[in-house]
Length: 94
Image (cartoon, rainbow, N blue to C red):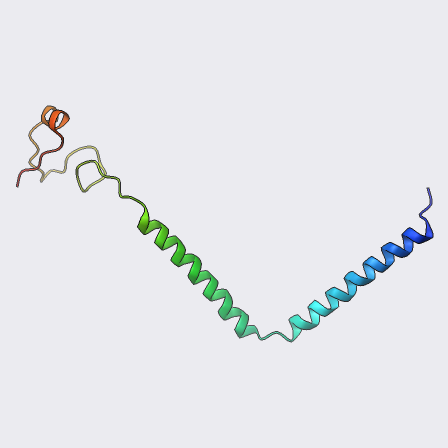
């Protein structure tokens, strides 16, 4: 199968347009103000960090009646018994 002249010309023109665009991009890249773009990159990184920190701060803290996350009571908590807490919720005594 032979490629037609019209198709060949169409593809050649398309490739030539791509080459011209890439040459323009390279010329602009070579003239770029690097510190300007580096500062922009740093700003984007800081914004992403801030977004993550805010999302983390908004997460609800797991609450099981105590400040800690473990299922066993802390040694300094004067909890009566598991039966009391199962019936009436957690009790803390000073």
